[in-house]
Length: 79
Image (cartoon, rainbow, N blue to C red; front, side):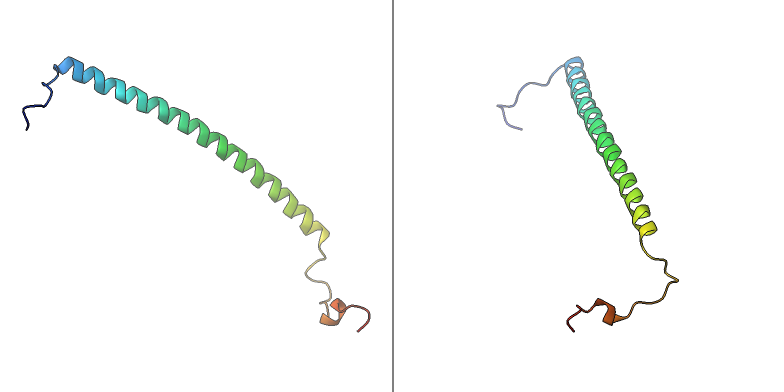
């Protein structure tokens, strides 16, 4: 240790400082949890909307048991 170091703090001051630091960290953690919950909620809404869109597309698509398509069906009419 050097002779320039600060004198040790009394135990009560040190405990108060540590308690204050923990309270600050707790406040930041609570804010972060709120932000993450909101992001999760929005993502779940998007997932639900996409599930609905996929279900609608499946209803529009022809059944898999139908006749298989010929590659010639995809050719432009001038061929």
